[in-house]
Length: 96
Ligand SMILES: [Zn+2]
Image 1 (cartoon, rainbow, N blue to C red):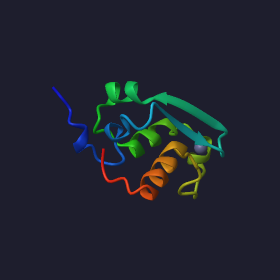
Image 2: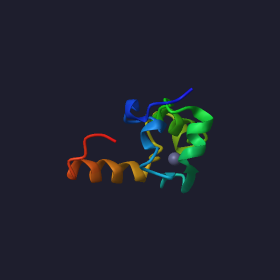
Image 3: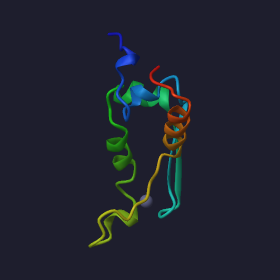
């Protein structure tokens, strides 16, 4: 099966191929930082897997997430995505 990267939706692993080699997840509340190979994630999850689903999975044991009465205490972010979005919107990039 061949996957057409031009069809990749923003927010999926497939979208990151060719843009990022390593995806980082950081949470300053639980003091964690992880680095994951994009190629490996695509191989394991498939290019259509959603980054947000994956992130909540990575942080499901975050102590800040299980505080009663707090909806979103874990502040895990994917800093590389912020950079991607900024870089592409300022350069007029409109597709791979
Ligand atoms: Zn956290």
